Every structure is written in C-alpha cells, then in structure tokens.
Length: 302
Image (cartoon, rainbow, N blue to C red):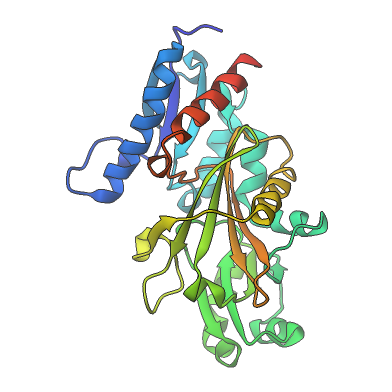
C-alpha cells in the first residue's frame, strides 16, 4: 500500500471550509478531525475534499471515504454518474456496490424479505397509477408517512392522517411522475420515545444515540430542531441492527442502523445509513479509533 497517496474524506462543497458560529458545520469539522487524528498515526495522509471536485485526479487517491456528501440526494443523477465513473479509479469506502444498494430505500423490502422487522410499508414504483387513498385503505392505516425512495434530511417527507389523504394526492402524483415512493404506517413512538441510531465499525457495535424531535414535530433531524441524547440499546436491538447490516450486498466498513418501536415496543429498522451517515464520534471516546481501525483493516485487505 502506497502511503504517499492521500486518503480522501468526502464531503459536500458547502462544508469544505469552516464556518465559525455555525454549529452544524462545526460538528462536521469536529467529526472529521477526530477521525483524522486517529488515522494519521497509522501513516495515512488524510485530506478533506468535495466529491464533485472537477480538478481531482481520483487515480492518485489511496481511497475515498464517504463522510458528509449530504447533497447527493438532491443531485441523485449527477452523483450516480460520478459514482459509476470513479469506481474503477480508486477504492471507495463503503464500496460502490454498497452505496448503489443503499441509495434507494427499496432495500427495506429486501430486509423485510430476510426477516428483518421494518415499519409496515407500501413500496410504490414511479409511474404507478395507485392513489394514496387506495393504498391507505388497503392497509387500514390511520396515520401515514410519505417519502421518496431516494431521500435524506427528510426531503419531501410528510406525515398525515388517513382522512387527509386527498389533501396530499397532488404532491403524491407529482413526485410519482419522477421517482419511487414509500408510504408507511406512522409509528407514534417517535413522538415520545424518539429514534435510536446504532453505530457499527467492521461489523462491531460501537455506540448509540437517541434522536428526539422537537415538540410538535416528528422529524428527528437536527435540521428541524431535533436533539441528540445518550442511549444504551438493549441486546435485542443491537442484534436486530447487526442482522440488518448483514443484508448488505457486501460487509460495510462502517454504518448506522436507525430503529423505531412499534406500539408493542418491538424494535423496527427504519433506515440503514451506509453512504454518508452521521456517526456522532464526538459522543463516544473510543469511536474514532474504532472507525480508523476498521478503515485500516479494509485498506490492508485491498
């Protein structure tokens, strides 16, 4: 392995430079700094760069690690073309195959097929003639979540009562003309219990946090005022998350599994985050070293 070649931590161009006073961006830099501090004693030359940098010679990179490419779901076609172009030029972590698989939330259907509990979901293909009312009546749900199959940061994510489906039919049809959608039964536990995020490196559980929405909202992302709290998952939650990760087409070097709970208190996998997950390294002292060791192992095996 040629350690003279740089290891790139991939970000979004908006987050390439510090923005003092912007806590959101300051956390991005803190997370990358923690990882870089653990990687540099191993001999790696670590740089930060935005994934769509036209001046980059990817063939000169030791590898590219996806970290905060948080614009990819707004530029999906461009991102996918870029991914296909560079897959043969440098090592991608997580791998291109894992990234391609994880980009579309239809992977949840594969998880369900393999026995992983997920929120009750109807997967609606782009161009479908089904109506929201027909879907909701078919399943008998009283309250639902509507979101695109390719999304992030709660893009076009809506929560509404079944009785109000007609009010959302127009946006449903507009989105469906361009992309696949998910209609899911809303899990009320997110309002009072929140959503757990479990972090894994090299298949091993590292730490977890609990994300809670601000009062009056259901979205737990900090973009919408969500907050993060310490969390110690139960053994069954860690095992469910581990089993979900094993459904990936290749073992991910790192990843996050988000869990909700149904009305009986049973954990459900709401998301697998294998492309650009926030990992809250700052919330667990050993986490950055565990991440660095997982990258070291992956690079040694290449």
